[in-house]
Length: 227
Picture 1 (cartoon, rainbow, N blue to C red):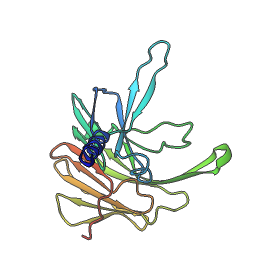
Picture 2: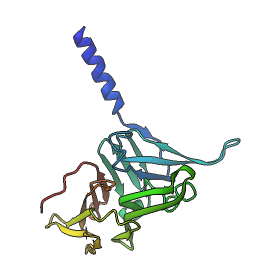
Picture 3: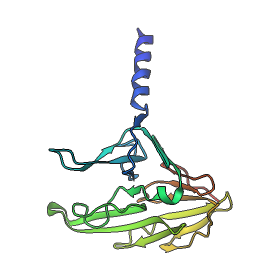
Picture 4: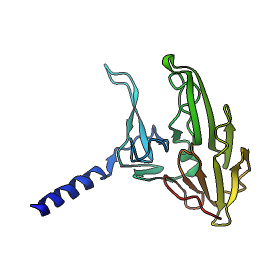
């Protein structure tokens, strides 16, 4: 009886973490999960944010898929599971498929910005009951003209505890964001760039942008290296 129960439990556990093969959709974005929610509400690192065209009588909409999945299309393959998200293919093009968990501006009235992902974020309403006077502090990463660029939008200055370090091709760790200051990331189109993020408001802990082998990897719960 105990053995039957153990087999059943293992079967349920395996099915819970089995990856779903999603049909290809070239209009899919991949929403990086806020570190606050990872492990408590969602166990995937990036939700699939899939555009569904209008079909009478239903209007067009985006649907979110928050279970482990794979999606293979011409030009990219996305895999999201507990702790890790990978996106293979042309890095410049596929970076534009990434979106942050939080919208730009007022969360009820604005849209996501493709190709701009938050390294760290904090936002809230001054008047929560009526959802007015939204403010946000945002530390974001973009790929502009083949170069990784960090931008900082401070409001309350709550992201000063955030630290971002980078290494190129396995070399020594250097600061990309430290004590509220941004340092450029001097890489070229054949480099492997790794960024580590830590701090109370970090959205994830690790991102690798592999220009050489054409891939992007994002992880939660990766320790910040000492050097």
